[in-house]
Image (cartoon, rainbow, N blue to C red; front, side, top):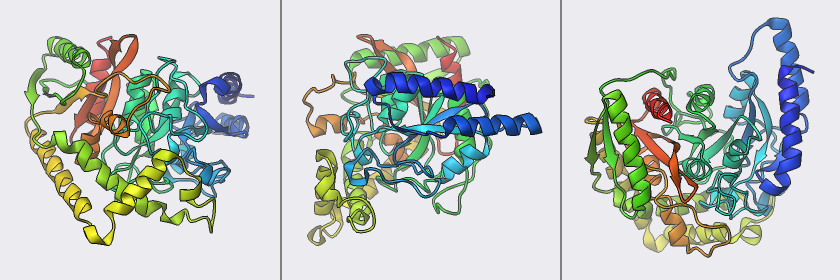
Length: 435
């Protein structure tokens, strides 16, 4: 055995011991140790290590990994084995990373709690009586619990940043198009992004630097500059207040900003974005309509079961809602109106970034609720009020740990303009040093 294979073996043993309780992984890669051993041998012979050598990586169960089950935490695709690698997986393997397993999630990425998995809600290791957040719940828990080094999730309206905040780790949603979605089982293709979870900013930046880039298989994918973390000076921070945010959470964020301004001589000023309060009501018509359209292929004929007959309550709600929105009598009226407001929010953020280097705000408006607590759908949807604006604006966003309220982790979000990932990671790294 070699250095990497020994490490992967320890992770596998830890998963076998702790995962039955944590429910972070749905499936473990049985060949992970052998794959790491083969990489060890290759490195030993060539003396060359890929960028991700030594990294064991968890993957959300809606991203295809050849030979592993990608069931989206749904009985609809139970035991569906992927026949190919998503582009992000090809890139990870090319840089000597090893996929250790497939992570739990809200079914078909529909939900913000982790409770909508057909296989049980993962346990939040940072607050065991509270939801981990979703929809990339297992990806966050796997990293927070030390079951892998980093993980992949998908973020449509906060599905990476929300659980990162709740579990006390780093979560990144890249700019729209920066990472290829080829091989992602989509929720809403005009909003979806594949991104990273890590225990620190530099590991998140490393993983994103590997998976980013233009891909012929995804027409929306874009090229970008190399990601670099640097010390920045004379930054102007826009502070965004989202209506309904817990004052204790807002206070923690503002104290962090004040501390950074003092240490680094940054400037900060409150910023207003006129249509930001419409983010949630704009987002859901888009998601419902696109999700309904995307799920028409789950008809039970080619693979899996018919989605309406085997899905959970939240998925069914979105299918029915999407059906209503796209019905002929509406002539796409609600969808088109939502697209117009999305464009307005995007333009408002572009205007803000002409004056400010970044916008900072909390990741979640309140602490996560207790597992099993009865929450209305609209209350769960409102939990994404701080994260959805970045998806609508197509910009990059990161959540980093900022403190605690009632012993529950709270994340701070940093928004930067589209394709400004280097600036975002640099600012996040400087805030990380304030600990």
